[in-house]
Length: 472
Image 1: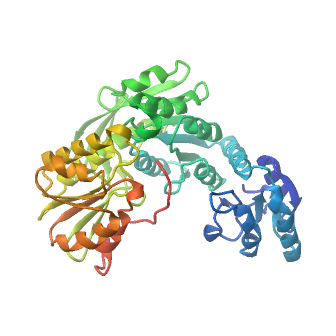
Image 2: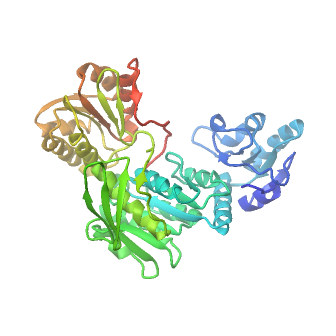
Image 3: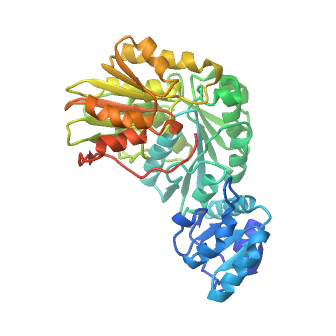
């Protein structure tokens, strides 16, 4: 919001400016925050109502912490004005629905960026959208100033925060969109209004909420429906469920086998050859997982839609708990992929484990995959059978649903009740040379197992970053 004065911030949010304080031209906040614990001086605090507390009640605390100003409901605004008057600084904006005000403000800043030449890319999918976002952001950053959703700011709250955090110089804005039910992607698309929409894949995630894979595809395809005429949709070539949702007035780029952007081959030294709609590209990415090759194709297609060719060497720092590898001082290789899980991402993670260079055993610590509905037990048994076929030596299941995996595994396995039990039991099971995968739905909390493995080991992290709560 660079250069915006308090009155313009209020107008953009559809809020009433009750107190301006010391705010003036050029003093606009660089970003917004909804948690006083994460608030930095000079930022706009937005007080959102929650299940346990109304964030607006913390407006005074935010102003005391040096907030540029606060956006709160009218019931909290009077007290906030009194506090701001006492301090002589800090703007107070009142809105009957602070979340709506936050979203309107983000939409206005998106328009400001677009007016300065920025292009917006939105990414969704059942799995791999965060990694695709990370790959695309790294690819575009080699060509232009690029901003992207930090970690997993991908919800009706997180996406506006990600937009507002984009600097004025941004020329490419890469946004991630999460989905838990019908209408949510449409809501996010209306805020971001992307020039390019990417659907990484469609899989059985949130079946409990949506009922069928066809319904999941329709929910993801809200991104396509929300694109403006002349925009670009990037979709997997082998996904017929998306075919009914494609539009004649939106250019479609398919990636993967049979698509316009496809993998031609992989060579020693990490060289990847891609056919980009008839143009042959040779890249050396900093990753090699098979599922990330598909994510790379989606990213290359999206970059091409913006007229950007990938650099020959592509170094990507992936978001936390998305397959990071750490060599612990105990000699155990840890693959931390426990941010979330569904059948599609679980199979991909197991395949990655199976192809990992290793000296000792391949150990999979797998937690419940949640929100799969009535077919949940069958999906878990299929994962157990897949782990057996992949050559996993030891399977440790965490949670009641994951226990079904052990029944189909047939090899050495152990079922544990929860993450606390796993955190105590798993470290003694491992020995130097083992490679261990952590994978499960976010609600299982397998990061506790990772912490237990690292505790006292002086782990040498090959790739690490802080994590944030969120949703898929």
